[in-house]
Length: 249
Image (tube, rainbow, N blue to C red; front, side, top):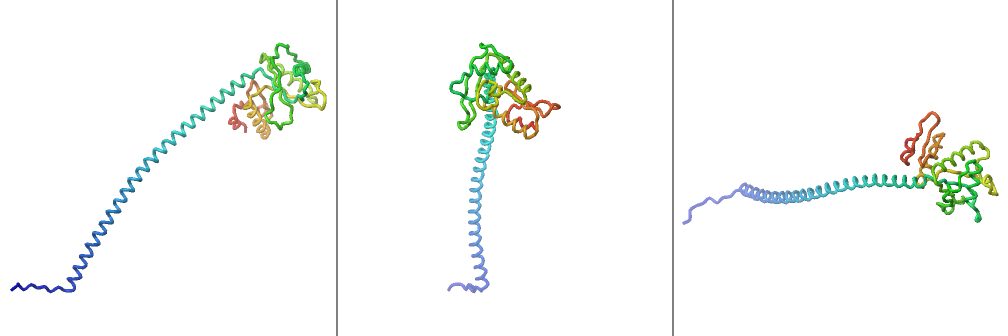
C-alpha cells in the first residue's frame, strides 16, 4: 500500500505557481527583446561609425578641393595679369583714334598726317609702321570703327598724345574734330588715346563711372596704367584691376 502523501494544493499555491510561471515567461521575453534591441543598437552604431568615417573623408576631400580651387583661382589671376601686361606692352607704341568718320575711298595715312599737322606735332613718315581700322566689338554699334596707328617708338606716341592735349586745352570751344582733319559733313569729335587691351578698357570704363559718381576730378592713363585722383590735394591711386576700385571712396 502506497504511503500517504499530502496532495492538498491551495488556491494560493496555484496563484503563486502561475505568477512564477508568468514572471519567468515575461523575463525570458524581455531578455530576448533586450538582446534584440542591443544587437540593433550595435548594428546602428557600426553603420553610424562607417557613415561618420565616410563623411569625415568626404569633408577632407572637399576641403582639399576647395584649397586646390582657391590656389588655381589665384594662379589664374596671376597668369591673366601677366598675359594682360604682356598684351598691353605689345601695344605700347600704338595710338587709338576714335571718331574719324568712315569713307570707302579714305586714305588713313593722309588723315593721320593731317592730324599731326593740325596739332603741330609732325612725325616722320618712317615713324609710322601701320594704320588700320579694327572691327567693332558690337555689330549694332553705329559709331565709326576705331583707327589704330602703330608707331616705331613710344616717344613718338607720347609726343602726339601730349600735342593733342595741348591743342584741346588751347581750343576749348573747338577741340580736335573731323573738320580739322579735312573731312566734310557734320562736325564729329575725334579722340586720341593710348591703345588699351580689352581688359584695360573694361577697367578704365568702370573706373570713370565710379569716379564720376564720387566726384573725382582726374582719371587718366599712362603707359597702359590707369590712375585716379580725387583732387589736387590727394595722392594718385593706381587702378590695377576691378578690385582696386575699392580704394576709390
